Image (tube, rainbow, N blue to C red):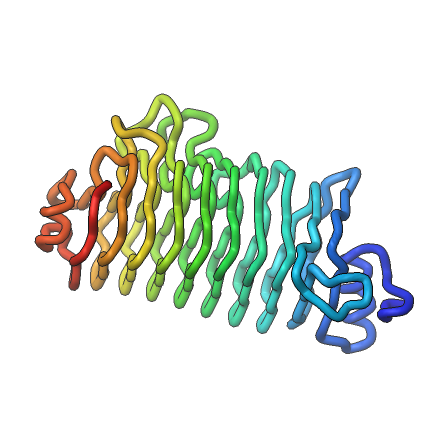
Length: 293
């Protein structure tokens, strides 16, 4: 079992067979797998998981959707996931911890109402060389930081070409969170490029750090925010990018800010207009071509 002619019925069973047989590639048909009780699907070794295939496994154009489940990649190297969608739980969509060389591409996470404080859609923690690209993160909520995504003490993280929409931080309205789309703590070589982030932030009772992207708690370095559309939930409170703590070596260029109170908050100088941002007042190594619509 587990062949094209006799496929197994769940991803967790396919992972079990692949682990026992030393196989590294798993192929999934398009469709929705609904788990009646919440299930965490752990990936125990380096695997390539490709979803969205037709019934003959000849064309990969759709998605394989896991409903009421999450993906966990913990202490594992060299995992690639494509055309896999995770939706509808109160935990997280994808959790990457203490791992390296992980790629999530052309996939999706949606409808997560996380009971955790950090990282609703995707959490990257203590990991290296992580690529999240061409992926949709939609309608994800978290109690404090990073409704769409949290990057925590990680290095070489690339968020490129993604669509992050309707993602909410501080969902319990405690006033302590931020970063509706992305939150970052103590991470380095972070590239956030060519993404569309819209209607992200804190929807009500907004604290001062209501934001689409936030850097918080401790120092981050080598950050590049370039070519993004960055849109908030409120013209009265949402910042595009918020430096709650100092960051260094950061490039902020060619971004389009929409529906934000200010495009940027600098740790030292406070709220910055678009001209002040482009004028270098955020302490960036480069800031140019940013516009406010």
